[in-house]
Amino acid sequence: MQVNSTKTKEMIIGPLAKINLPLLTRPLGTIERVSSFKLLGVYIESSLGWSTHINSIVKKTTSRLYFLKQLKRAGLSSNQLLHYYTSVIRPVLEYSAPVWHYALTKEQTHQLEKIQNAPFTSSSTFLVVCRTLPCYMLQI
Image 1 (tube, rainbow, N blue to C red):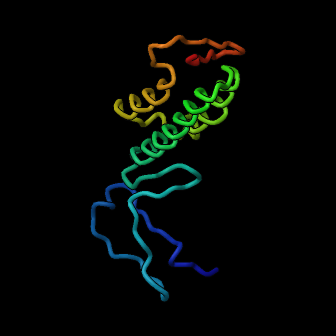
Image 2: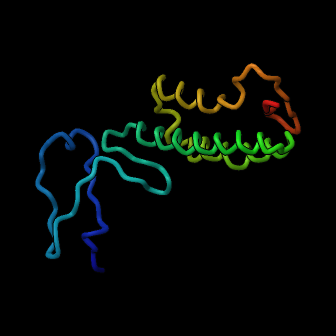
């Protein structure tokens, strides 16, 4: 098996990350040392924190919420808006949650709750749609 040093990354996890260890070298080059990387859609940090992952979730969700507002302005029905929310926005918020949710700080939890409740925090009227539990609220 050949190791491609341009695609290979090294990450040291735990207390050893603070020690300045020598870099791994291969005949074709040095392997890059990183403090975080994306594995199967989840950002993993050497400190085992989740700030990089939470920031990426917030960024993705914010852009999708903007598109939800555009769809509402275009005149889509509340059922179509609900379908968009449950099929496009909720999966981003819930993807691999059992892996990282237990270790969130209060600030990170608040950040996620704020972005999750963003479509529902307006002075306009709300429509509560209960097809099955849980109920979803959409602003109309």
